[in-house]
Image (cartoon, rainbow, N blue to C red):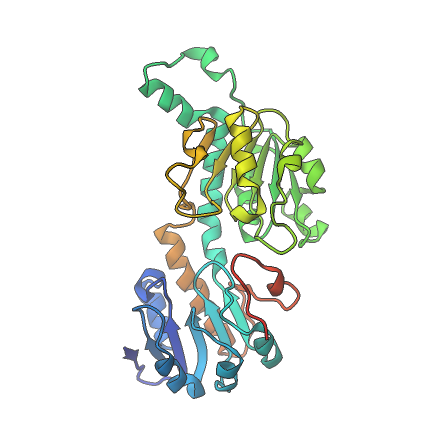
Length: 348
């Protein structure tokens, strides 16, 4: 369907938000702001049909969603100013070089998920440190222990040595949440300058140093061509005994099988929200490991996070269509987009 504003100022906005819907990502006031930017051509039943896309390309100033935009389509859209992905990854459906050559902003609303994922990751870490869900299971089985003996393997997150691997929007939000705990936080992120890590309240260090020194480790890095399985058996064995690992970013950055094995042996504790294959196989060994806190890729999937997608996307479109740079979403960058591995990346 199409929504035509009374006075569309800028041109056509293709709204192709699969697997989302516009109502899912936009509260009514945000949707009204979007409609004020131009003629909305909306398709929410699967991918927008090619004929519909190509009919509107000459007048299109922005794409909101996952529309395939190869070099030919970009060339057919001379007024195009921005492509805003409303998933959480930069996908392989865009010819990024063609966009860079034209000065077209390619954005992803991934920062919308940072507060929800950071909050869940913090909760998982507290659970691992204090044995909260493990104690619940023990008590339900009638095998509980009372008093000090029940906390023989527990420790406080407050004041602990903490490592954060990956300090993008998610890592920064987690560091804000950790601040009241008074932890000594070490951070590793080769895509961030040391000065930025220090400004966020963390000590920059290399990965091995972080692992050796940390009692709790948050793994929040994006998957890239440089960091596949960077937490492998060797790295996991650098961690102190009974260290807690929270994997809440991309499964590809860790050897999940090795992590599960060490949790099963009692060597480490771990919380895992992301898996190499989802849904997790019914017979996967992780399901039977007491030292694991299991989560079905749900830390970011909150209504507040989905509504934040619309706020970020529409806010940036308002800027870009006024001739200003975007300020809210993450941008595709020429130097790094080809190295991201959450999904395959299109090449010119």
